[in-house]
Length: 379
Ligand code: FNR
Image (cartoon, rainbow, N blue to C red; front, side):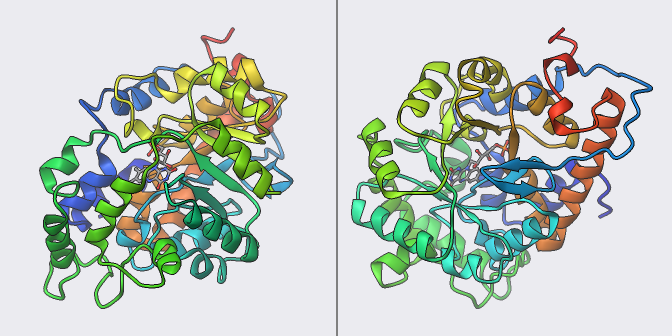
């Protein structure tokens, strides 16, 4: 299949992955209203064309938390990434570093953080879920520090997992035995969809490292379901702040009041996010929530945004709506599933080109030139 646009990877990923994995990635919660809204609300934002602005020397570079980035992009934390390509987290982190952007490792990654950081030429970011077992949290944060990780992304929109009906249909979120059977099928040597998993362990590396033993992947689903902590509150942010010296970013903010609380509790950044439409169905799209959050806290901390971003034009729309940088979720996961690390490199290159063209035609020479004036609605 010929891939020439960032959005071509989705279909290529669908061809390659076992259906239960494709739908785990592709799906959202409930009736998928928010999932659709994320993309639709971005697409309906109109950008203004401004000509003859001399955009020679156009640059997509930016600096975030003292880190130089070639693009205002970060790869978002995505669980089970090592299931979509062989040692997928290692491949994606290296592709991100080669493109000059950070990669964020999920708590529930297949590869443990040490395996991902060691061959990666720039520090990765680490995403933390609050689990009831605080010993695990302490352990994983200490290991992240020891590995040289500086930036922590604390995800707060998962006090419990969303209602994902595609996963219920596929068996992914059903009884452990059904899930275990699917994983066995997907990694069986005779399986048609070889995503490179054969003959390799695929446990959740950060957790098995803590437990001192690998578990069958199917067993994690039950363990995680029981371990997400509904008692998570701002006190947990205080605890983490006291523990973590580096930049701390709170991911999953949609309301200005919550963003102000994040400032109060010492966060250095927020990610305006609805988890890619996978948690609260029916809530605002991220891009619709973003301007009010930016009005409330811009200047107090850095603002990232994700959910629904598929193209360089979408990146520009998020930046024009108030974000300092943008996280890519499914966009890079489809590319990784389709073509491994080379797919992620190709995607980032396509997005960079698309961004440059969009910036040039809107009359922006730097990322800082983008703002509400870039959008027709913002005038
Ligand atoms: C996610 N996301 C996520 N977020 C997080 O903080 N920790 C995680 O482990 C995961 N896992 C995960 C798995 C899959 C398959 C997806 C698609 C997403 C959410 C992710 O970081 C990001 O917020 C969304 O993916 C952004 O939306 P888009 O770009 O996918 O539309």
